[in-house]
Image (cartoon, rainbow, N blue to C red; front, side, top):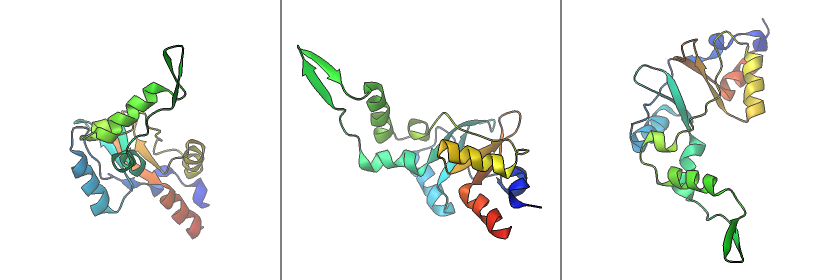
Length: 155
């Protein structure tokens, strides 16, 4: 069988380490470090996916936020960047809970999809991991770029 013809279920890590949205950020960071992983599905009490916490989400904690560029014109402030985005960045930089920092809009895939579909989705969306969810939105696994590369190496 060609590696890219395999299904996501055949390659994914089942029952991935996850975190709840009300967990302290420090606890989530500890999970990432202890498990040598770069992201965590964020699930509610019923196991439904509500977000994802990745290394890039956590970078705001260290880098901080730059003030948006603006110009003054006739006593009016005109922002050259979206001030709403600045507000989101501030929230991430100051957040203490997973919900403050996580990405709520998550790209997912079902276990029956092919590995090729997973690879295409990751490439198009420029993401490193895809939570695998069943029809009820329950997290059943996670597939990463590294998983795909391992399959390619075996083929």
